[in-house]
Length: 129
Image (cartoon, rainbow, N blue to C red; front, top):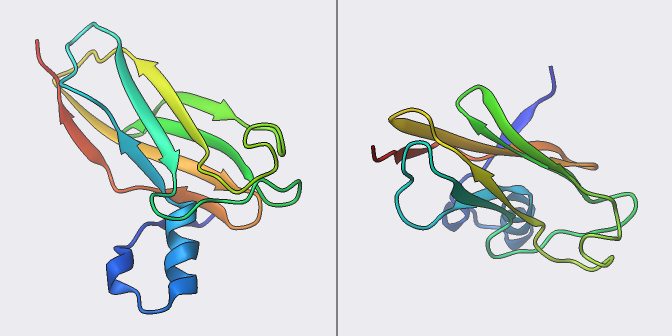
């Protein structure tokens, strides 16, 4: 089983290089408003908050996946050098999902071709009827 890396609060990290490493590999989930059961809901996953990630042919974000708990909701695959124009930037994707339950436990995973799988802590979202 591959090792899954998780975000830690970079304010608690002393070395700038370690902050950069952790932040640029971590997926961050954002959304607006409250989702309604049975209606489309946009969820954006962005790689890195403060620091951007390379888009080189040997070091890039290959995919970003969105889960509700253990259930895969969506996955986006990326080709090196085309998504970010071979520049350092934040890989980002917006998934439109349709909630069916009362609550979502959103988790994003991203795969860096050099540093493995990275995952955020679950984001609990209440769903309106």
